[in-house]
Image: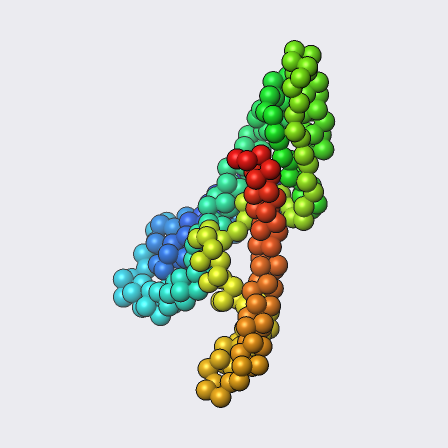
Length: 262
């Protein structure tokens, strides 16, 4: 995967440097001299050729940048509950450079290969109950193929034990390949903090609702309107961030577990 038509640069080192700088920034720090220097050297020509051999930000300047920019930004994001999400996104992004390096080294398929996995599923799968979750916008999904393999596995098992049956279900849900991994990293309380922080932006009513509750003369009807407005804002946030799709996944899993008395 050449970067900027340079076949010697695949972008891996640039991504690693960007992630390192971002991680220090999201932790309320001004990026270290080494991190900034690595970033400058990893940027494709001509910037990388102009990068100095050494970099040293004077400590007074670093202290000023920390007090004026880094710490206030960190405190704002942290109070809104957004910092854990940003750091989690960096953990996920850190896998991309490794993938780029593997492709650059000649990797062209998954290990084990899809053929090996399908063969093993046909031959050795023995679970009595299985739930397959398929997502409409997942272009990598193989649930329909896997369903066929597991039905073949049931046929193989019945040859040895005719009375055995496999309870196999496939549910098709809204979402994409990342939906099962998505959701508030801090659980329900952190999710509520996100809804409160972004409700006015996505829902359009969060700010006015807060103002209404602050008025001493608010009537019962107005308070009900505030509650409805907050609820609509929270709903809008969940939909925009994909949390509504995650909730549906959880509902399906809980229902499936209840059916099996697990």
